Each structure stands twice: as structure tokens, then as C-alpha cells.
Length: 51
Image (cartoon, rainbow, N blue to C red; front, side):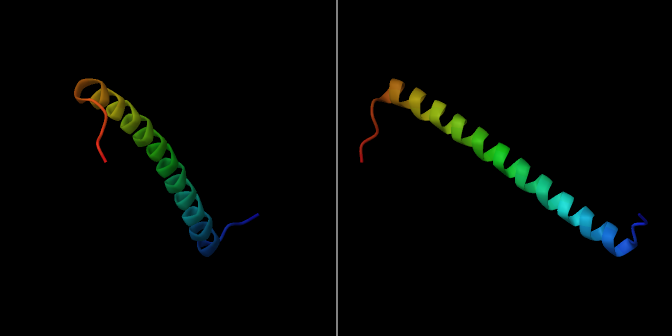
């Protein structure tokens, strides 16, 4: 199968988009875990958060 420039750009763009989404998901999970740890630490040091 011979890939032309157009199909190579198309599949390359799909690959970049998929990688971007994967990195976004990994970072969101990491930030969520980090936030929970920070909230727990602040709660231990300063007491519960008032609403």
C-alpha cells in the first residue's frame, strides 16, 4: 500500500490528536490525585474547609 502525502498527513494528524488526548487524560488523573493529597494535607494542618 502506497501512502500519498494526503493520506500520510491525515493519519499523522489522527495520531497526533490521539496522543494529545492520551496525554491530557494522564495529566488530568495526575492533577486529580495531587489535588486530593494537597486537600488532605491542608485539612490535617488547618482543619476542615468552611463553606
